[in-house]
Image 1 (cartoon, rainbow, N blue to C red):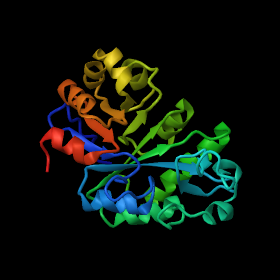
Image 2: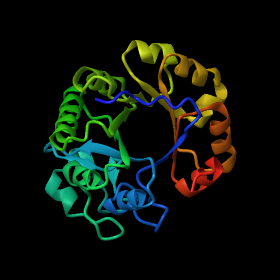
Image 3: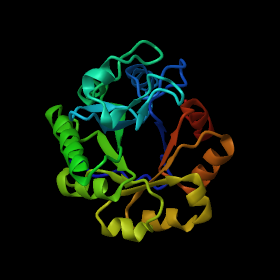
Image 4: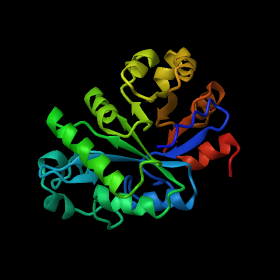
Length: 250
């Protein structure tokens, strides 16, 4: 594995939250949103991965597929893959499997991928999903461009145990001090802008510990500028165009 690049605020990067879906109004986590991020030559794209009841890893936020009140709304983790596959996204795409998504990532490896692994019903399911993802990434030789994030501590711990040494693993929960996260073997924190504004010293503390600092999901100029000024390494956003503009990037 390549060493993690610690940016320290000097080369801050834009991450497209669930893909560059704002580019053409395409659905979040869709292949079209991934392709838009790649075509825009963004530093990285983030996607969500969860698992169906029969063990297929898919790219979707969950736990529901479909809008609230939709009579055909599905609980992803309680539905089998065939049922999920039968439902179309707004642009006509089917919900992509992890394998399909990674195949498209491999076609444009200059755009990195951050996989947000969603919490599952049991620790056993979470371990199974982590193994599935790591194996799929390894099969395609994408270890050097894939990073991970998770809200659940068990998922992050399994990533530390199973992923190649040097893999960027970000804790999303916002409750751990940088020192505590580093002590668990995590290599990044990814907290909300509100958390950083409440405890701004955590950014400097994280950098002193060698942690990458990411945030979710910042979409207005004021918050983006605050993160730039305070040295966040990644800016994860639904509006990459605005973030690039504030950073002075093309």
